[in-house]
Each structure stands twice: as C-alpha cells, then as structure tokens.
Image 1 (cartoon, rainbow, N blue to C red):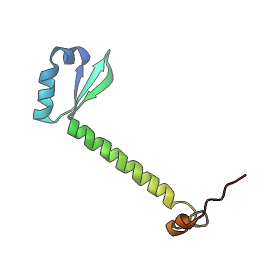
Image 2: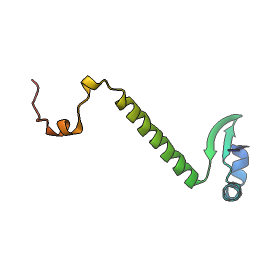
Image 3: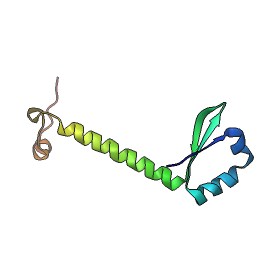
Image 4: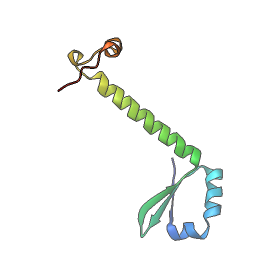
Length: 89
C-alpha cells in the first residue's frame, strides 16, 4: 500500500483537502514532526478493517496456543461443563 509522507505543518495548513484526497486516492498519510513519524491519517473504513484483521490474528494465535496444550492437561468441553465447583482451602 503506497503512503504519502507529510509534515505536521503541511497537514495543519490544509486538513480538509487531505481528507478529501484520502477519499479520492485511498492512500494513507504518514504525518511527521521534526522528521519523525508521529501519526497516520487513513480512511476510517480501512482503519476498522485493519483492527478486525488484528483481532482475527489474535484469535488465531490464541487458538494455536490452546491447540498446543498437552492432551493430559486438556479436558473436553462436556467434562468442563459437568465439573462441580469444589472450593479450595
């Protein structure tokens, strides 16, 4: 995905036109301050899609981790649901 790098000063002078440019070109902006990246300006729907992908990846990693549990430590859902609470102490 191509990105355009702009300075914070440049963004401050024409924020509305940059938001319009996002709609037209679907290209995010990296906003720099003192030569260092400080923020990203992107379309909101693209941001939401990115968050969804990250959430899906976290779920996949959690599933992978759960699948690597040794069989002797794992219990079936049915057995888990049938367990009775026994207070420790």
